[in-house]
Length: 351
Image 1 (spheres, rainbow, N blue to C red):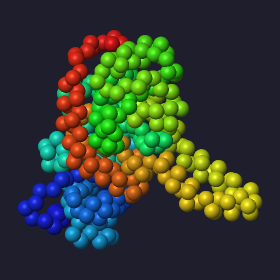
Image 2: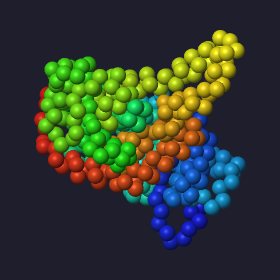
Image 3: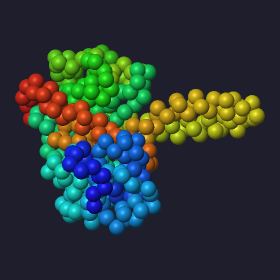
Image 4: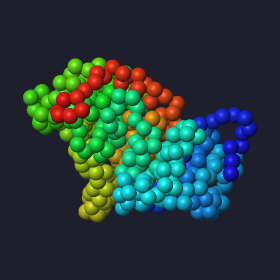
């Protein structure tokens, strides 16, 4: 069912896993409608999922003139499903259907707040990897004194080889140039100290690769340097990156709880908190994942945006808008061009 409202004019199409996430399909649909209104119909959203359920929620909203369509998918990969088993057993899942549409170039991007492992695996399997990319990587965003810092990897590759980190740095540099508008982005290697002698053998080997590469490598950085904005892009293995990400996600809840407890101390504290409410809200907003929407999966032959399972309509909206921005910047073409500078590397060992 086509609701594009414009005949003969080709617009970008973004497929949305309407059944992925803890509050699907309502949050996905409401977020998509918000994105279409905010973008003034610059693109079309293709809802992937159980058509009757999607239509039922759409009927509750004023969708007149909005560009959307629905593609039926009968299966959903749950958060507890094994990504490998689910891809084999659920051929008609929303993730598989949406990504096949992307591979066939019927859509220009895929967005999902569903099972992260399944989205990563399916994107890699169905879309394939860009040339010279050993492993796709998930990005994560952190507020810093200089704006936003991109961390790679945030959970896709837990067992990293040195040249994986080198590739992450190149992809992250391109992303930061185009999406953050940073000229010659600073790249840092997460380590336990700034000295080049610090770290395990893998980290030392990665340091050498980065030092001799074309990226603007500023050396090793420590965990405290991320929020200080010492680097625009921080590279690390996915195990470490995911632990940092999950820790950061807890910060905003703890701060809100602390502020509430402070206000309960007495009238003066409550009055002060009331006066500071606007400022505190702006500060906390920078730590809120909803503001960033989702995270990009870099290194696949397409555009995949992955969201938090508990994504609100606002987060879904920002995921879709981020997908549109990545489409417009032709990020994959730029990444492939930059990756051509990488020489072949051994397939085993630490180098």
